[in-house]
Image (cartoon, one colour):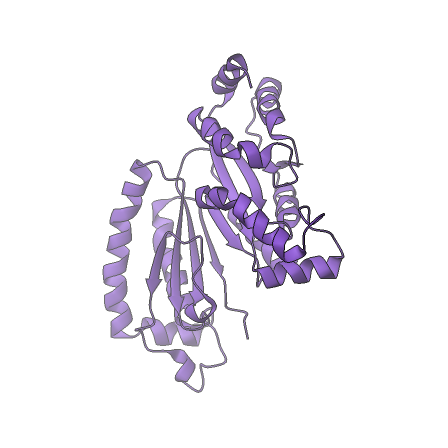
Length: 300
């Protein structure tokens, strides 16, 4: 990439967002790209990394409209593994709002998916599927740590992932505004790896042990009334909300573009769902792009 090309890109960057969908093979990248395409993104899969600057340059020359662009990139993409560590920081430095969505899943789930689809892992030509998955994890480890959003699709269906992507990115900001995402989850299934702030609310009384509430979830009124009426809940929210009111503007000042707040209880069905919905209602007052997902609400 020449210095002139880089300068032309900087002159035309206009701070508009560029989404990169990446991650482990078999984790759902094609589904994510298709979902983005369905909500108006211009999506390109497997474009060699050295052609990205030229495409972005042409995009700025052809139209002045806010065209939302998403690239699918992974170990199949020519030059990606070798150059991503230097390429992405340069794009950010030039003013592009780069948003890296990293998809992953457990080894067991990835092996099952490749077996069911009878596809070959792109790195498995001379290795076993287990060795190929581990090799890919190692190659993309630095990128995972640099990702804006990490999505573990182990427990997701195609429809779950599609809905999550469409919900979260349909209102993706065309500026550097902070985007807020709220997750409710169950600790028994593990921490959400993408969370920036994790709040454990297992100290609150659990509706699971109330006969009439056990089979309901936190989106249903009886459970909401039970949880929100507790003095412990009122005191907690009276402390938690002001803390976020202080933190969020300071994150904005530091230039953070994505903040994920995870609220967890034991199983992810009751308390965490109620509190996540209450948090959503409170954070809407900031006027920032906001999405919410209940990660474990459908688990048995």
